[in-house]
Length: 215
Image (tube, rainbow, N blue to C red; front, side, top):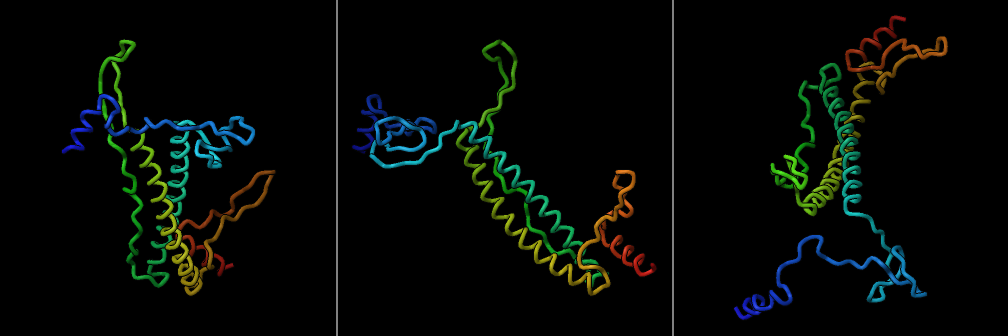
């Protein structure tokens, strides 16, 4: 009780309230050995030698979002390759039982911060719709999303590699080439002519194999 009372008394003088994100004062100018200032390499006030990189908060968030979008795209591509492999390896023509093995869940791994939405008149007198969110919550969510995607990408990649090994073995055992058949092309008049499209599914694979036997 005494501690609480003291805090209330001193609130108007020193401030006992918790600092909000962005209130912290940062030392970004470091001292060098010749007493000059640097924002890359130098000593802080406690004489610790630091290497630092300073950027604007908005730029850092945008960079993180770009990283996440690239990771998300790669994960989705890897997932589609795994899905196709699981579907084909389950086909009875390759010795499967027709049941596709469960796929890793890749949706719902990102928790979006809460938005505050308002409609009103802005400083210029225009009627506007305003959406706001806490910067710290957004940045933490983006960093956590990167960790989740990287972790899940390893799981999907491991499953894809295992499936493709089984797929190559099953294809050979059932009279198909181990790898999917690429497109057959030729050059004519300076242009690439597609003689036969690439294998899209097992129907194509068996058709191509049958055509090859008849030649």
